[in-house]
Length: 398
Image (cartoon, rainbow, N blue to C red; front, side, top):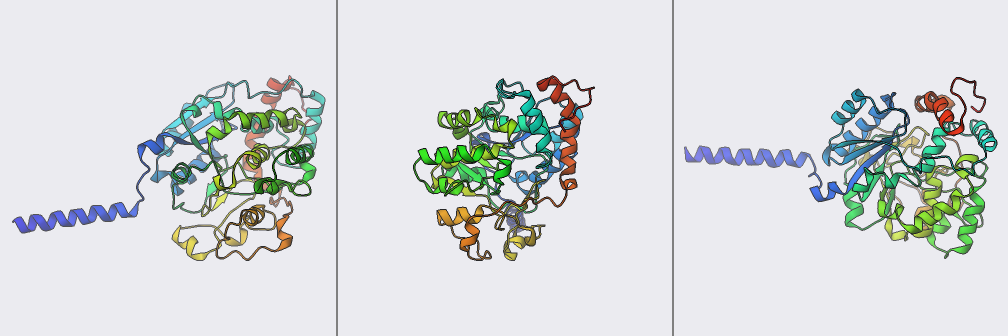
């Protein structure tokens, strides 16, 4: 009897160890308490894209670690209870909802109403989202203001996840644990390149900062004999919020914000964040989020080029569509400047690839249609609130 009992105990212990081996250990509570996901929700009444995004990130990463998730939105009513309930069930950590009441979510008094209307009209030709006032307000707020939301003040680290984001690979490491243990400041999944024609006011500002700052490797990423157009994508960025809350970061934001580039130009949050990072963050505090299979609604898809990596991480993406190391991405330039080793399957970088060229990855305007509808639905209300354009009157700015 004793022998049978002993054999049974060994079998049970073996089974438990085998089951544990199938799932990486969750991060310790102290780690989880300091980090959270953050998503700005453009339309609380249209949750389909939001739910898809949360489902994807939970399945690929967070179900193993159970980090909290903060959902912030600017609206004239609370997020519907049924949407909150569905998000709470999808999130493995706590789902936290915050209706934005920050004074930083605003239209600066110095913005000329006519200039803003012209900008919204012209932006429609350049980007599927820039013609919407909410998109411009969101980008300014996600540059400065979001980090002081009461819900996010409880966290030191965050990962920004935009609605429409999906992950095609199981991420095999805890990037929150990595940024804490390695004492790093900023991680990014993508390195987009923009045309100078759509960020006209930004180029002279970047040059001004570059000429007054020390010549650093990261500064050369954005400026070398002119503005390079290279950025770090804020979508799926992982960052130490203490950096975004610092006086130095605030000073950079205030100086560039004086030009009202978010409203009269086509700036996004990542343009200004990239400038601040290039000025203030040491290169050894920066890291690239690889093996994610990241994709967003702007056609910037990353996919590991190594077949072994794709197989090991259950990737459902096509490496032929990889944006990360394409001629339209700034990633090769960054790897070259920082002397980072290229992934094994990436061909060596040629001189002509050190200044990548902008190219719109959207094949047609309908590619971004799911999210533009969410912005478009709310656009009349935002213009009424911030521009005093009655919602019932025909609007000619879009």
